[in-house]
Image (cartoon, rainbow, N blue to C red; front, top):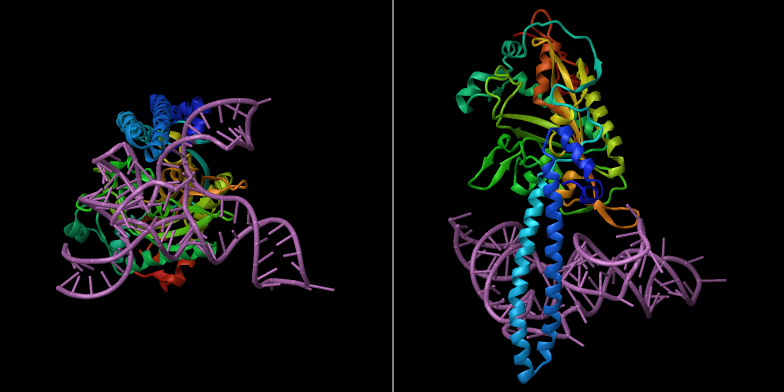
Length: 414
RNA sequence: GGAGGGGUGGCCGAGUCUGGUCUAAGGCGCGCCCCUGCUAAGGGCGAGGCGGCCCAAUGGGUCCGCCCGCGGGUUCGAAUCCCGCCCCCUCCA
């Protein structure tokens, strides 16, 4: 949810943000109107309620005819109060719906849509096309797509043998780095309540991407960001230092509407594993924290000895919670293009406002915290690792940083 | 899944049977002050969250409303009575 004070004082900033995102400006006016009518309803109810309380005290002390007279008056008032209360509830619901419908205010992201990103930097040599990741994985019996499909359907797979071990090594490398920088290691639930899913903004325009279990009204998380964000729901945090968590979880995505896209291998799958960084910090520190997140992501890609680039994602391609987003894209030689492997978003106070997560400022007043998230290590990284480190004979050079976790310097073809 | 017990302020805990100064006792802890020859003991004062309204308006207000797990209901009036749900504990399956 956006800051209502910003909306009241500078509605044009919010309208401009909507234009940048390519979304409707009327949502802004709907919210302004809903805010207005909510306040009217509240004022009306409170006036009646105050009168009712005053009269109630008199009733308690009155006797005989005086009491009868008071009761006659107060009975009518009772009905009015009830009606006014219902009006407040309705106005608040309308207000909440309107509030949820407005995405975070864009800050500094380049204008345009998905293809209008800015390239911030490019690192490493771009390898020529060789065997693709699936061919290599099959050579090493690291991934079994066929049986994945047999057991669970398309876009499912088994990581087998060295593939499974390689993923574990990768995730542990990520977790070790996070812990080294002071993150608290977390293994999170994969199923969350609707309010947790809503709190992170995933039930908006991306709702069709999310698996829902109707029998229990639970959602499967698409990233541990969801569980980590909701971890401090309804709390007031001490934010002398940012609170940083590294969440390890399986992630689930329906990939609705992506039929025919990336059907080969593990680039686009329904289930994968990920170590995600998450930070609760002072709003004034959010921009710096975002840069740190990006730096940590790059550090890990460096350890994996991968060629990659960093892009500044355009406004129209931001998630509803993000005010700005940087993606790291690793070079995938078989496709001769860069593919996203990490993504870090600054959600400012948007998620915290939904989840009611606050801190105390210098005057001991409460205010919403800022939240940020970023990918550290994820299944998809196996693709560039295999492809960029393949050698002519099909063997795979294991990056130095991964060797301690994998116990091998090279994956030889059996 | 079944039976029972419980959910009250930062924490503990009284109040619920018997609805109305509950404007939620008391304790612990916390902050400031006093006293005290010094990390003790004692005394005093002060603390919550959300929202609305008003003003000489980013700081105020002896102003108002809401908050006793959540949501409904009964009643002139609900922490208290009734119904539903959630969570925790004990036992059973």
